[in-house]
Picture: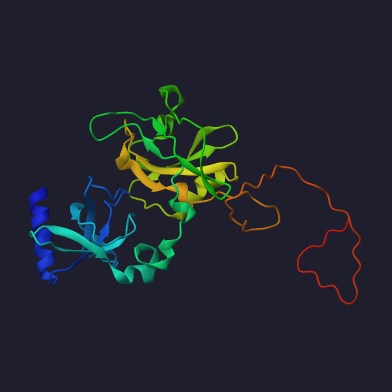
Length: 300
């Protein structure tokens, strides 16, 4: 079925559903952007023998900019006919926020939450592919100079970015073979002042990514000296990387150090320098009353 036929079928589905069709963002491989003003969406086309939802092939649908929503694969949106009889995304499905446990207030421009500047909205080191849809082919990534949040004040970090081609990271070696895909996460080493990149384990393109893939990348560079920058989806032995491979802006995350003895380190915007050193603690234990030991008690 060609593009025109698939678009006409979607128009019929909207009318059959009473003028509003529930869809999910994304093309099924992590990309949500069709072009500057359109997003890929897929509608529920049925269920299989195991009652799993079957989605249609992705179609580029216009967005009129009226209602804010998270730009990520799988976000449920409502598609309707606009004033000019063109299918458009009107808003996110309100029940979706509740089902996935998200607070919808930050997406309301009049919310009190948005009256405060949050760290994740401060632009830090914009990192983007050198290649473009306009014909520029490259596997290089550029990092541009931007304002950086320093010591509770908006200040300028004196770094020109990756101006020369030789200083731009090349991700060619991280691109998986045909039929496989992976997530590549990029970090800024604030001590050595260089861009680092790590990849999750390559898996078949039919396998969906989840949080474990991001955890795998972060675990390789888990230190407060490494600032998260950008996540890309690379697949199928591709020869060029462009904005369509954009997966997630990682600048909203803080990469805290592992604090020995605490399973969940407390994230902080302040640099906490912890080196790989240990100190032996020697003490005498005096027990008043009964001592119950669950597991092994090692006495030196």
